[in-house]
Length: 254
Image (tube, rainbow, N blue to C red):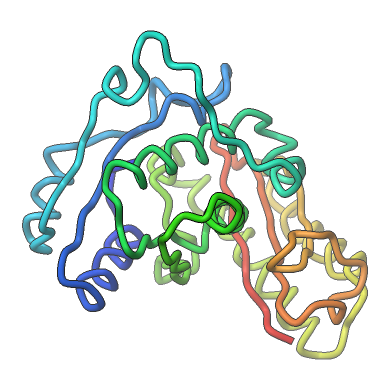
């Protein structure tokens, strides 16, 4: 959705290395924002984005207008059912319907062989993988690792909303994930114990308001009571720091 940072650029670098042609789309998609979310104030800087993309020698930049994507009589939406009903889907009930609709539209316009998405939006990536599988899109989806600041904060366009103090407070998300990784490495198997320890860290800053912490099967997003119950797991956290909602996660292979 633009306002490019090193996380986005890591996807571009990978595409440039692995493909003959790299196409970037920038579109702040209105249908994936709820009525009380930040569509109007979502950060945008197209001029800066264009300069960056020229520097990285991207082959094509596609910036459609909203009325070109969603015509006046637009009626058709794409929706993945099961995996979208929990976690982000619970807190943002219309979000994934907007995501899968716009991604399917962009796939149909651009017709890529490979599409790159970031792991930071882990549930979104899982939803897109399910959509591509179910609707038989002839596209390979590649999920690329989270890119972080030196202090561990996951890069996000929304980080610009954070005050200096909130920026420091936001580090509790990654700290809680690091603790979870250590607990699992040291032999802890019970999700409830790991989650409670994570909650303690996040509650240590007054600006935090936790939406959820969940440990899930990385493929199905089924909730796990025991972290050894799947070969790959995601530990997922969503939390408001001040007025800014942030998400983060870590992927663990058992």
